[in-house]
Image (tube, rainbow, N blue to C red; front, side):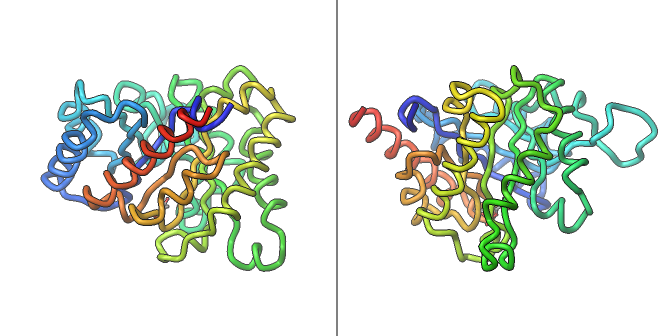
Length: 264
Ligand code: PEP
C-alpha cells in the first residue's frame, strides 16, 4: 500500500496560540480554501476551549478536529484535566506524546501509553508523536529511541485498534527550529516505524497506517517529505497558524497523492 491508497493527513497543532476570534477566523479561512480538497484529510488541533465553537464553525466542512492532549485517567478528582470521553463528541483525533508534553510536563512512556488507550477506547484516533533528541541522533541512537517509544506507548494497544493509530515522527531538534530533518532521514524512520508495527501487530494494518512527519514543515518544503513513500502527511506547528502556509502544505499533499495515484 502506498501514499496513493493511504489518504494523507495534514494536521495543524495550534499549541497555546490564538484568541477565540483568531481561531474562528483561521478555521474559516482554512475551511474555505480546502473546500474542494477531497484527496487529503485536514485536521485542526486548537486549544481546548476553542473546540466547541470550532466544531460549530466547521460543521459540514469536512475538516476534522483534534485535541492536543487528554488525561491518562478515565474520570474523577483530577483538577484541571480533560478526559478522553469529554473530547469524543468533538474530536476525531487526539495528539499524545508530543515532545513538549514529554519535556515540559514530565510525561513518560507509561503516561503516553495510558493516554493512547483512553483515546482509542473512546472511539478517537491517537496521533502518537515519537522522536529523538539531537544528542540521541548524533550518537546514532535514533532508531533505538523510536523503537523504545513505540513499544512502550503501544504496550497495551490491542491489535484490532491499530486502525485508530497515526504515528507522527517528530525529531525534537526539528520542532519549531526552522531546521527540518532531511526527507531521506524522515523516510528512514517512517519505514522503520511501519516495519516495526507490522511485526508487532499486523502487516496489512501497518501498511494501511498513516505516518506523518513533523518538524519545521512549511509550504515550501512539504512536497519533499510527501514524495517519500512512507510519509503520509504532516503534523504542523508554527506554519499551521498561517492559513496561506497551512493550505500550501495541504496542497502539496494533494499534488503528491495525485501524482502517486497516476503512477500506481
Ligand atoms: C510540532 O510542534 O508538532 C511541530 C511540528 O512544530 P513546528 O511545525 O513548528 O516545527
